[in-house]
Amino acid sequence: MIKRERYLSQIRAFYDSDLIKVITGIRRCGKSVILDQIKDEISQRSKNVIYLNFEDRTVRRKIHNGDELIDYVDENKDDQLWYVFLDEVQNLSEWNEACKTLRLHGCSLFITGSNSKLLSREFTKELSGRYVSFRVRPFVYTELTEYATQLNKTISITDYLIWGGFPGRLALPSDEAMRSYLLDLDETIVINDIISRYKIRKTDEFQRFVNYVLISNAREFSFNSITKYMASHGSSTSKTTIKKWMEYLEEAYVIQRVRPYSTKAKRELDYSFKLYNEDVAMNSIRVSNNRFDLSHNLENIVLNELIYKGYEVSVFQNNGKEIDFYAQKHSKAYYIQVALSVQEEKAYEREFSAFNKLDQSNRKILITNDELDYSTSTVDHLKLIDFLKADEL
Image 1 (cartoon, one colour):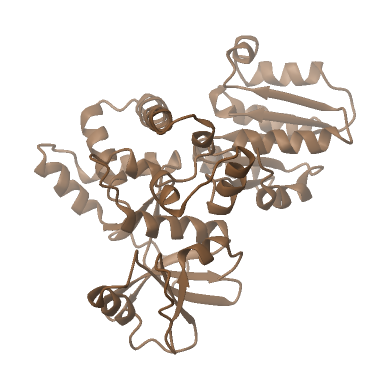
Image 2 (image 1 turned 90 degrees about the horizontal axis):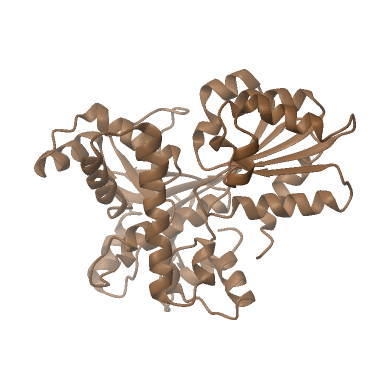
């Protein structure tokens, strides 16, 4: 497995800190591997390491709740600084109380989980600045190709646009096995992690909602539009329920909402937003007859890569025309338009006209999968492969 240095470099500064290190992300994105890599680095200079994986039944058999976790750690440590690693800790009842206590018992605590409830208001309010969080995502293209090289495989751009970056898929021997793995992962997230956790009764309606959202990535939504879609298919699901279901998908890191750009800090524009999948495989496994949605998946991929590269991203409205992304990092901002190709005249006019009447204060970028360079005097054209390999815009 590759060393995910971008994440490790962010976490290293906190190895000996009494802040609780919270590592979150969707299932099978590589959190446990990063936790193992942190543990290996620390083990090179200290033997004071305790590791527990709460997806392991043998661990759950001997530790049933937070109090038993505290007792177990205290019985296996002395008064020195100890490094405690708790993998998928949300599977343990009263885990949050235990984490707060262990922090006071001389532990440098690292926890992982697949649910943003790890960062719930109750937990963060009680910790009051005594934690630091790190969001891990599936592989981006450079990570995917590095891992593929280790496995003596090659990954094309098209493969990435269709099947995304879940690391586990690369180790499988066939496309059929890979698809089965992704389908099982999807079912685990939707059925076990969401329907079971939140005790959703309208399971058929919920699954229809999930399928609609995930196969419609990189499109504009509103709660009203989703409610109308459900009604058109015979469901009387209310807008309030749709909002709750949307929150469940976000809490499981399945989707993310990208809102319109606003000059007002942290303004909530819930009436309209674009939805993107955490990984484009969630779209592709829902496609029949191999009619994969490369165009919207490409936009989804660009968003995921921008976030990985450290940009804050929103949607920008330019006099009634939408620019896919307004990306900001430090003091720089970029207008970014994304298309599979602008080789045809209509596509060329559509994508370039989105930048009309914008001043030159921020760089304008068009990203496509074309091989030819379509840059103009005011718009920089980036080939997708060059964007994916670059550290910065």
